[in-house]
Length: 192
Image (cartoon, rainbow, N blue to C red):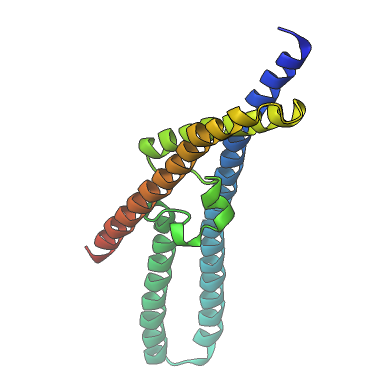
């Protein structure tokens, strides 16, 4: 193996790793976003409870016993509402997918830069990346050889780009189906 072949193989392996790195980074950002969402709900609930407690302490000093009893009932109902809100907010990320397919931009769908929702999705993503990496490598080789591989380039288009596009479409379609199924199940769980 000469030096040029070594660098071509190295570039190919690095290109194959880029989509996996992007997918992992996006997944980590989504997890942080979900954790931040839960923390915000808890913080809001704590501030609301602190306000109700302080308000009740101040109101208790100037109200009759009957009025205090009515205020306690209202505050108890509001505290139950706050608890229900926090429970719903903390359960939401587990029940629904993090990113709905409709909210993914063209760039994410085209290069499959999102975490697959199933094993089949992972397979389609991997096959897409394999064929895409081959196309990129072959294009780089075409450029480095000064266009001497023109006949091979059209064959590469048919045998690499078309399957890459096919696997891209299959991955997006499968992911949409799974997300729709997850949303339907989460709606059923909410209704129950």
